[in-house]
Image (cartoon, rainbow, N blue to C red; front, side):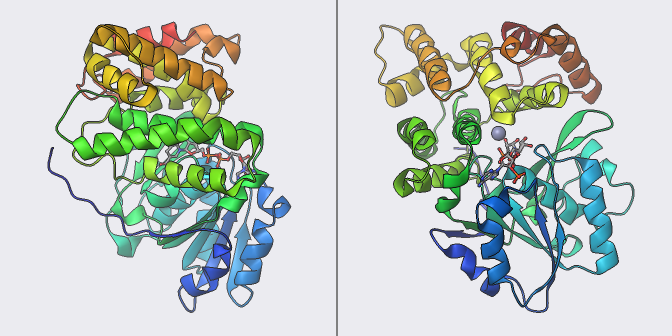
Length: 388
Ligand code: NZQ
Ligand code: ZN
């Protein structure tokens, strides 16, 4: 196992009726910005619960944070915070609203042009320089409620870029699984597949000594396989919804990544497909993931075989046979979860993707990705073209 530090200061508050605790969680004398997305919170009762809990708190509302939040929109919130002397932000929504709030939190006191936060991947480490924030999660998927990373799109240049740092953990996150009941089928499917792929990025590398992390990762995968198709059919079932929500948080709250190698190239390529075609984040992962496993078969085959045996109970006479079956099982699962796994299922204009992505990565100097730094630009091209 490699050395690690485990730091996660987010107060994670889970369960039915927990939104009412907001009144105790917001620091005294706060003036807050209530940030939300396109309005789902008005239809599912979450807004009313938040307002009821915060009836005596001074509040400015900022709605309209898009899925794949835009830098240009978020900068409007930054201005409001500066002008209105706001000292706490409450994000109410899915990964996009929470990520947007992480950006806003860091940008308010950022010296210089805030676009540099994204272009230069600024790391926020000084807690005194960011605006503290909490979250009310409405969509289990990204793990953003308990991690310090975020992804923001620059509309003007069609770039989807990451930011983060230890100062950007939420102070608290309220995770009430009853919110799952109002999610559209497409978002339920997306949530399961995003969480599943987060585990794969940190697990599907090569054999190592971190036995417990492997077992935790496998148990999250198994749970998602067990409940994923069911929760799409029965989102108001509390047993299914609560396990779904906890799995999504555990998939990316930092725990399973400690002491192990990780990949993340499926995400890096997937983000470009969203930037280029506005395909939902999870669906880009379903397009790229299996082809990345195929293209990187020699690097990943031992771990693929372990995953096949332990998670899918595949039987085979060789590592290669088990690994191949494991990829097939994964694709079957993605289809069962409502995913299309080819880029041409989403756009007729797919042939420009490989040049676009390879050029982008070259400009950014991303020439060696993956757990062994052997996902070269040629490999990226191959993976993208296999995904057409
Ligand atoms: O905007 P509203 O009206 O709220 O509607 C949203 C949105 O249209 C809707 N929704 C959310 N909760 C709902 C609901 N509709 C009905 N009932 C509810 N309870 O769902 C739609 C999608 O929301 P969004 O927040 O975009 O989805 P998700 O949580 O999947 O977040 C995706 C974003 O997170 C980034 C992705 O790249 C993408 O930008 N990621 C963030 C990560 C992180 N911070 O660690 C890691 C991930 O890998 C990912 O990259
Ligand atoms: Zn993801």
